[in-house]
Length: 155
Image (cartoon, rainbow, N blue to C red; front, top):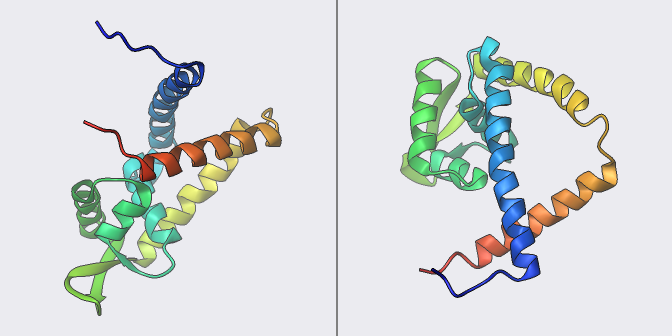
């Protein structure tokens, strides 16, 4: 049994973390249902979103890092998307083996269709939540992310 105890802030942050885990599970499930008619999953949609938000075509390692995902998982999804004609690989002038991942026309169409569905859904979901509350949540999440990136857990 541990002799350590949470500070008040530590206990509250633990509750935030646990609620975030529950929220993440629900978001992934809702996302799967939202894009299932398009032949996508939340994971595939997330990778397509990383491709969309990149400032220029990027390799898998950058896409994974940008979304906080494991490179191997993103590589598997990108390979699946490529085999289905939603993305393609282009030569990378900076690295011979790390190809750049780009949308095909079908991939762009799938991503745009998912975005259309997401806009309707998220507008309904956010209807009764005050903008100030959402901004506060974003600030807390941003602070937590910054700290996690600067101070990873110790052994």
